Length: 251
Image: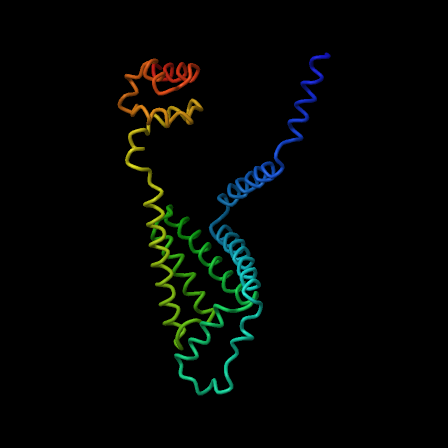
């Protein structure tokens, strides 16, 4: 009994000294996963509505914050001049564009809420209907968010329909380019394709930290059936992991 008391006390102390930030992050991640699992079981209208509202709320918060740090109500600094009626349409369009970009917290909250909510909602519907998330889905969502942003903010020339179309196309092209770049850079390097089976094996064994050792010794997938204890020793893999790897390969 005298030996077990310090052990229990040490265990309690270890638990009390866990990083509270990590615990909160883990809890939030668990809640997020449960929420996504529940959301995936809902009908398309319900899922799209919830995704749109939550994304719009996040966008509104970001927009309000940005509007606050950019100097409050920017529209008060960009009021139309007394002779605004005599201005040509291009000048008025430029003024509206400046007001949209320099608006205060409310204006920016509205603009960001429309952009993020429309983008998320359209993307959600497209993914459910098409069963995949690709560049077409991304561009369609961006087109919708850009068009709605133009209509709500009043940016562009005197023709709202043409402005919405132009803004939607611009947003779609930019989003499409970003999506393609992301796909390109997210693909594994050509070298990694030589270690697909090796990576899978190491992950199954919980030895993924030793993937770099295999690469250092050029022990690719084609060499797996030929691997020996001495080969693993040469790439500095300890005895315990060597035994697990060899047993796995033999099986």
